Length: 338
Image (cartoon, rainbow, N blue to C red; front, side, top):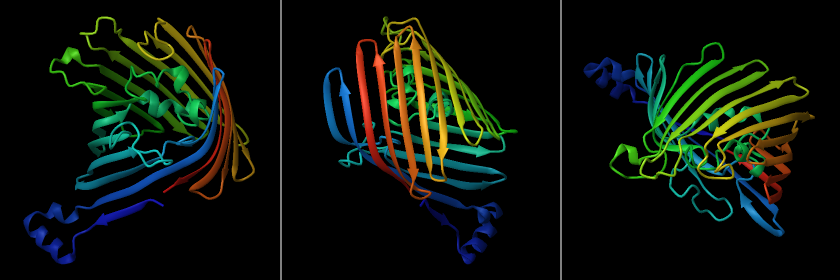
């Protein structure tokens, strides 16, 4: 369960503060500790070789985090988020740093929210609605065909040194715009020696409909002449009929510098999937994805069984073919959220 710690001044302190500054008496802050522990057994067969091992983060990356806010008065709040990925099977850090998933501070209010720090590009954060597996469930996810494992748009869709702005939600609609001054870990002085990423998104959530339109653009380090300006456009959505939920995504990736789509000027990607409730505590999922040009195809089947609101069992099998390379994954495990 998420643990919320609230700091409120005592009555005497509040009275003393109100004599100095009435606004200070109303200040309230909260810090939430949260996380996921996901661990399972995975069998993988790739190009004739096989592996059976315990693996962390099969359904969702294992993590712990702190999220907080402070009421500044007049409708404004200071906000922050620090989220650390880890490997539950051995206790080591993931993403190669302490807070590899999120690390930002910002200001929120009626105008929306501004955040500074390490964040997810909108294509990675919002477009997961177009697949029943989102950005998780191993290679069942949308990452391979849509290019977010490649590194052009941050490591795993995360960019450093970024400033993001998101509007308030208006009738189910929300827009966002972000810019990273250096998406990776470069420390060069000159601006043109950095990998700069622009990200933008528009999404809608209302009733049975969820949809997102996102775009990313990489302006690469100009001191690496072979590195190209890359772009990534996505249109993703889902519709929930209650007895079945349909998912779909179209992606257009241009000039990928790394990953399975590198060397192709243009790659069109398509994902189709379904989620089907099985009773009150189970969900069956299936998807198919294809990227033309770079010759990527994949399919996946998955099942989630809820033991409680915060704990579930899962199982999945998938196959991903990237030209002459073929990978089959099967995993069963347990996920607990707190």
